[in-house]
Length: 113
Image 1: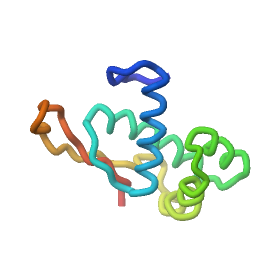
Image 2 (image 1 turned 30 degrees about the vertical axis):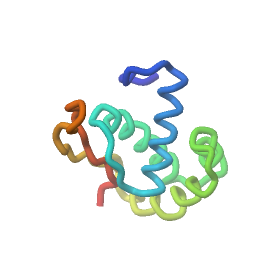
Image 3 (image 1 turned 90 degrees about the vertical axis):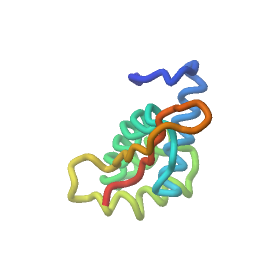
């Protein structure tokens, strides 16, 4: 299902990605490692595409992954309408360079303007 394993077992990786998608929707900009940002971009674009069509089925589909009703409401009411005319590329990744402690490549992921 996912291209990158990010050094975690399946359950841990899915929980991590669910939380990252939720935090990205809530804050609209987060700092994380480059590999996590690349994987997060794929998922965030998928759920924004779903949210652009405001139907009950799509709300339930997104809610089955995100689990936080306030976050899903923000996604459908505020974020998705901004991208109504765009076909894709809802997120952008800005590379920051290596982290001091372990030299992991860091990046900012945010919604495109």
